[in-house]
Length: 339
Ligand SMILES: [Fe+2]
Image (cartoon, rainbow, N blue to C red):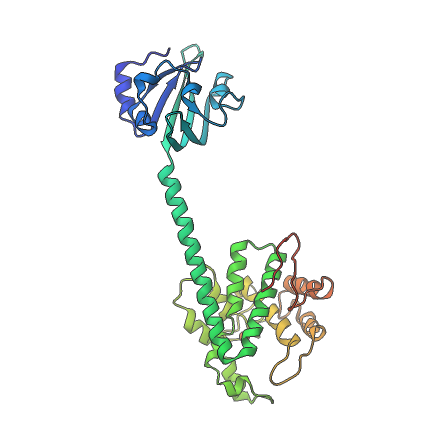
């Protein structure tokens, strides 16, 4: 048995972590107060028992058991474990197992320090649930905005849905992370929000637009920016929408940004927007089809549109059979992208 001086016992009893000391034959020699409180155990009945007679864990009697590893020469092993006491109590703990050695380096005992991680685990679970609720609420608000536009202008709403689908696929093909794709999808779902300020007579005008009418339509990224600028989105949704008509060579609007001044999300949105807008029907013209849309992207590749994003878009439509109205499985995905 490992002998522990009474001064050391007093010191160990004052610690906030549970401490247990075991001899090299796995006999329990000492438990501090935090440990006995953590497992609701009476140390007078525990001292002298084998540790595996009192506690059970998935590694008990296994070669990977940290106590076995310490016996075989390891010095310090950190691990997290759900500890089950035979009295029925269970604790989730961060554990540190360390070797106790004499001056000659011989193993004289093993000390385990347990920090209760149950509160941390509960807090983490509550945080995850709360952020999931917020994410759903955010998605709901975006959908509500999109539906508001739909009530007024069905063409814009359908356009936004299809652009969001293409953005999601392009983002996946580019290897963007799930979080980034969520932001991109939401930006795309309301990217023409600013058209709420454009009279329906202009939006649905069947004929050619006057210069004044074009100027009014061109205000829509700025209008959207004004509507969204005070919302602290966890993604660059506002910037992506504000910049979706900017072009690589600086010829776009509203600010004439160029090259790297345009964020990636806006460059993806620009390509998807053009691909959908040209392919589909508009009140002032018939659908021009994907071939015309792809020709426009090819012409503007590297000049006004990001070349890599154009290449992905061309490959999607021309060799991989992407269709706005059909479920599509991006590379390596088991889940179809339907919107
Ligand atoms: Fe737009």
